[in-house]
Image (cartoon, rainbow over all chains, first blue to last red):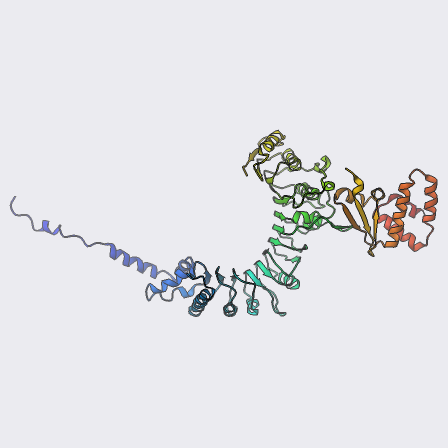
Length: 439
Length: 112
């Protein structure tokens, strides 16, 4: 055919690529999102990335300044040097800059950089926060000695969550508590006995309390009517719960051995009875380190006067060679008809037990203990000695709806003998599985 | 297992300590379970509201009743002498007998 149509040539002309046009439209969509959505997006970034959006465009210059949550940690503040002075200088510069440029309210402030020591610049930042309405304050000093908190912290009356690590707490005498504080987390802190009692007492809405490794006080008087969660690990002489009728989750670890020489007193309520009678709503209980031994120091009754009807999870760190601890465990088990899950972690003897103390539990000690709701048992750290195996035997024989028992020994030695014994035990529950885990 | 290796000490409300034998404890119903449960070598038990002077008399009574269990006449003689005290002391002895749950002594004090 002669003479092609002129239109055929036009088709060879390449189409303009559409991609750049699409990108332009996308940026516009993000930039034009409603303010609160942008705030939400920025709040999900690390502070460093959020602040860096200021270089995207003139529109974005001050979008980050409305952030309500400021987190200064190793992710948001990158310092390549190990020199404490360099680190300090850079951090102070960054925090000062951010606080100065920030606009609006700060609800959450967290300072937790692993290389920052407790410097007095922190005082200045807390003062700034105390003039606002900060709700969550988290301060973790990872290096150096206890950081003494400035008095302005105690003026932050809108606090609902306070978390401190490696600090010295010494409020002024006029301090009236944090009236709306619901969550308090104190770890590696130092404070006086009366300061501690006062603090708890003057925070009437306190629901969660965590105390780990504290110094300066040894008598734990917890008066907290709204408390539901309590987690403590440290060295103390006694613990008294007052008016804690809603406390449902408790974890207590006493990190020092109470020893074996104790004076008993005729007529006083035993520590075990007192402890449980002040926790009528307890649902989850973890007894760690030497706390079971502490509770078993007095005369251990056969059962508690008032049973723990709500208790459905119990974890005990127990020395199976200590008869007092075993009797205490049996007392609790006998008084917890609704227990669903039990965990027993063996604690080895610190010193070899004297011959006079090597008394075995009698059959009558194991009687009248019906674990009718118990479904799961976990035993760990055992060596396979008769005392441990007797207890396991007792558990298997008295748990009619048991589904699974897991046994994890402390070492490989005697594992085969232990398995042979476990195989032999009668089980009250036809559905019970016994799972032996390698150490 | 030798039981005599255990040391039992009773402490009065005013701080006096008295070491006693396990046989003596058998008469004190309230103390007996404490000794049975606690396997430590030395058990120290404080008796609140009972002074050293009264506690010492109580221990004498228990010791006498343990050592002369078969000799009824000697016991009657001892008991008569024992309650031959002023009213205040008698009341204290009765209270202590009640706290420690020593049945025979409680009965004796109420008879007087």
